Image (tube, rainbow, N blue to C red; front, top):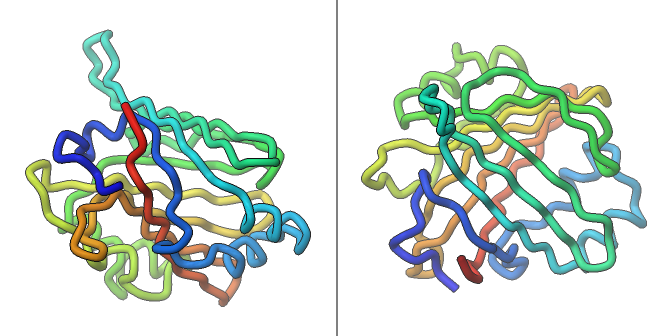
Length: 196
């Protein structure tokens, strides 16, 4: 189901289902991240659901948070708690091991600067193109969620979250680039809205 108009980049709260028909395959990126063949096949066959809770600190500091409980049929779930202040934080789970991630809201201009040939993402080897900035609907907030992870296993994963028009419908989408050495895998994860 398309994303309702009430769902915006500042309110992603709700239950979302990964639409595997519309999304790009994740197998090449998972392989680059060192996930074994059998587990990749299990992930490929699983129904993947995310429960998102997005909120702002009540203490007056105003930091935005996105907490995600991800479940995949037949597999152990994962939890991601993101604070959108671009501060690196450690996270560890059964699938990817230990990673250091940071997240923030980013404007189209900030994305363009990050992804430019002289930008940080290109210089540091996170991306090889402007794929992360492609196809976005520029909506009222004028921003996206930017996530960057560096794993102890030697790979980077950089994501931009927002809304795109897919098949004539407004959808919640994540453009993702996984990089390791001189290899890059780019793909879209497209979600169906399920419920609040």
